[in-house]
Length: 106
Length: 400
Ligand SMILES: Cc1cc2nc3c(=O)[nH]c(=O)nc-3n(C[C@H](O)[C@H](O)[C@H](O)COP(=O)(O)OP(=O)(O)OC[C@H]3O[C@@H](n4cnc5c(N)ncnc54)[C@H](O)[C@@H]3O)c2cc1C
Image 1 (spheres, protein in one colour):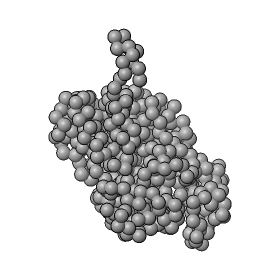
Image 2 (tube, chains in turn cyan, brown):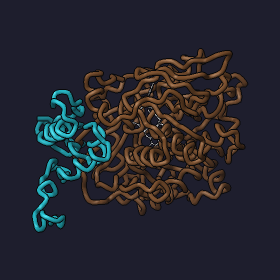
Image 3 (tube, rainbow over the protein chains, first blue to last red):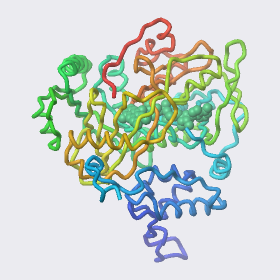
Image 4 (spheres, rainbow over the protein chains, first blue to last red):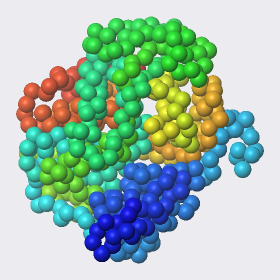
């Protein structure tokens, strides 16, 4: 985490400690590395890192990921294809589905 | 399937994509696990300039939607031989492909459950065949099955079979591993590039037309998954083949409690715990009609929940975080169609009928041998397209 390149000695690479996806612990650095490797769609990055696949379904990280891809490609963020939202929008307990448990379905 | 609008597609790919070549020695249509495996294996043989065209991003189709189970417990000799070969390849894949991440191959085995007397009889027959071929499988009583999966409810289970070297892997990583290894060997991968016609002259392939331009080539390999029927029709070939939706879901991750993939053919479900900790489970629906829809339904969620809470009761405590659907590419005998076609230069690798992920390594190898005019290392002449006309079908009894 401590940068050893000349001129930057001792400085922390903030991207290594900046969390993009809190559910799956994905850092900004991981995302930047993948973009540099040529993975430039949100769907691919999601599949490799699980960014946005956690219980919150990408509520925060989805936009952050798109913004990062847009920045790297020098595109407007609305030109970057977003990942698809998958049902259910909130986690539901399997047992609750058959019991019709209102708390689980809310 | 909905294809991404072009404005998005261009924005996400233009900056890094190579220009489409004017000519190639082979063009692979489809960037799923099958197409990328074929491209890699061809490049490894030094076949020449290989271009792979994928109309969206890699693994966007069935490959990125599948359960990614890998089993050798099959009912036909051919499927057993193909999967034995593939398991060996999965075991050394990270190294062979020099993949910087991991394909997450977990060999926790497959536990297959027989719920009827007829199914039990079939399993006994299967196990005889599998053992003859050297597959380390055994027949288990219900209580022995519970020793392997303590959370299993064995009500109505007649018997089970278990093979410890079966397992599952991460389908995205396997596809990307083949793609990056292929690229290193010179394969050109063109994403957001859709083949919309195959040009022929006196029954021979001459080239492929795409939305990004035309590539002249003598060899086209169709690995378009459920869309292979559409591709084959570009040269006027009708293949007996239909797409069928299958649904699947994933739960939140928890501590490891389930070693093997648990599966039943008669009840059509399967369930596994990934190395990440989440449970992935799916179920076939006998009422599903052929079609290209990949929307997911509430009915599936309910049926899956009912079934899994009966079979693995503690799993009922887990929350579902995502559900989705993908397509099986079904053939009448549940075996793939591999090899040449009446159109010279066009090869098919499709019709995997719900088990193409696990056959990807061996398929890549065999197709590359066939394209290079070598004797395939496993005798697969029975898997050619001609078998349907000849009426020589080998039905696989053990599918979900
Ligand atoms: C829910 C589900 C669970 C499954 N579980 C398992 C399992 O446990 N084990 C197992 O072995 N298998 C499983 N399968 C089956 C497995 O997913 C498939 O057999 C396998 O992924 C087939 O790979 P493919 O590369 O042929 O197809 P795909 O991954 O669909 O790839 C075909 C590609 O071709 C592209 N394409 C199509 N037409 C064109 C065109 N004209 N031009 C350019 N590109 C085109 C598509 O965009 C697609 O990316 C499952 C499938 C589903 C749906």
